[in-house]
Image (cartoon, rainbow, N blue to C red; front, side, top):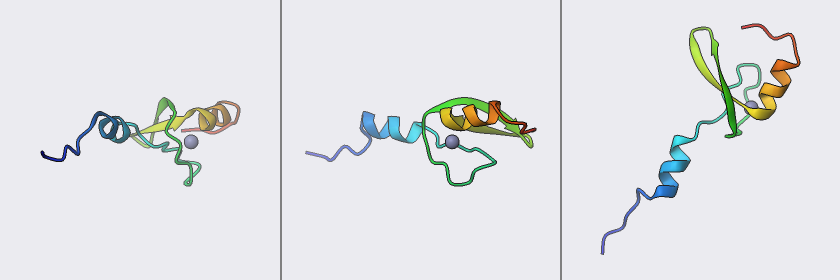
Length: 60
Ligand SMILES: [Zn+2]
């Protein structure tokens, strides 16, 4: 009876990225909506951050 650590739930958990909003360092949401290219890096952006970014004058 071995312990199976690599369950489907674990896979899903680790595959989901955390929001990488470059204008907010403390956002850890995982409902990624879009990716932006910021300083040649692909940043995952969650839905609420994207709403804010798309309504603002941020430039990247
Ligand atoms: Zn976010």
